[in-house]
Amino acid sequence: MLGLKLPTDPRWVNIVEKNIEEILTDHAYCEQKAASTAISLIVQFPEYTELVQEMTALVKEEISHFKMVHDKIIDRGWVLGRDRKDEYVNRLMTFFPKGGNRTTQLVHRLLYAALIEARSCERFRLLSEELDDEELADFYKKLMVSEANHYTMFLGFARKYGDREEVDKKWQELLTFEADIMKDLGKKETIHG
Image 1: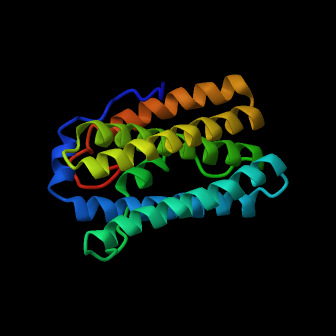
Image 2: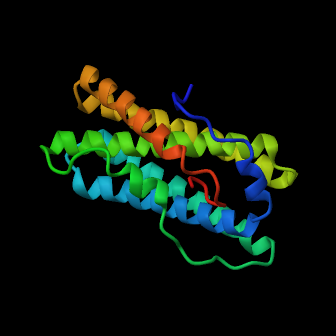
């Protein structure tokens, strides 16, 4: 369903289980960055009314997910750690060349967002099925559904605002690029790394 060309190695869950505090901190910041991305799309592309409406709703949802993750951190007697660089996202963002017209820039941003959400969904599914911590497994199962909806929304907007054939070609190329990135990742207690 997600179209990812390289699934996460299930052993990644073993790393997560040994570092629950770290994964929750990383996850909280992923939710905060997702809200920031939605705000950025509103600010940079205000003429796309339907996109602005959906991004407004997404900001609320993502910041509520941030709070849910933050509450899990507090409930376990921890405090939110510091943000760290997201190697996955930084490497992913090098795929499309900078510049181009506004529509091209928008389509590229939407494709990046769709892929990040798709990978998050895939990781959440893995956590929901493999974590020994039943409370967290259930938590990630619920979040997995949201991430799938976000992935399809972003991809749908890219296809709506760009040339469908060109967008689908770029999407497949981006998926292949992402698979190469994932060969080096999956060894850290981060949502994407």
